[in-house]
Length: 242
Image (cartoon, rainbow, N blue to C red; front, side, top):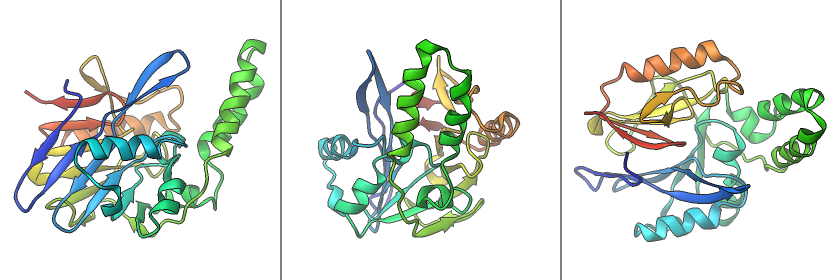
């Protein structure tokens, strides 16, 4: 597995993977947001936890990218580690357009309660005394994610003119409206949390917390049926097929 990837093509088309390292408790973790860049657009796919905007700005600067040139942020789903910093980006860069699926949009905008928060609150009564403090802190962290207006709704099978052609793929299961992105001319799949990379294998993300495991399994199979040479997983990084 590689930690960084830059896929070049014609017309200044780039796929750039950011490597955002951070400490979660006493462990080091990494997330892999993606930049899609061409001669018209620069799009960030997912934007990290609350407070992560400066880390993403720094990572982009290290790649020679200017956050002021971002045109869109595409959110694969409404989990806090994918949209936590979204409100900060929108506040600092108000011209950025927010992109999400029609199903996920109400959770991103705050019209509906975060499903992950509902799940966490429902689990609180089952926690041991030792686990309760963490459970309460986790719920509070989810409550602190700020809602943001979604400007562009996308649908399964829609082809966006990003980076030479980007197909929106509906990959429900982890959340109901989860999407993945397929850049056909680069044979590259951005999985979001429809697949994570573990031990050099694509697997379902956190099955114990997946909202619909059957749909998640079908979504993973769906992704595997595309003509893909490179999978970019938000958790786990890059898998290059032999």
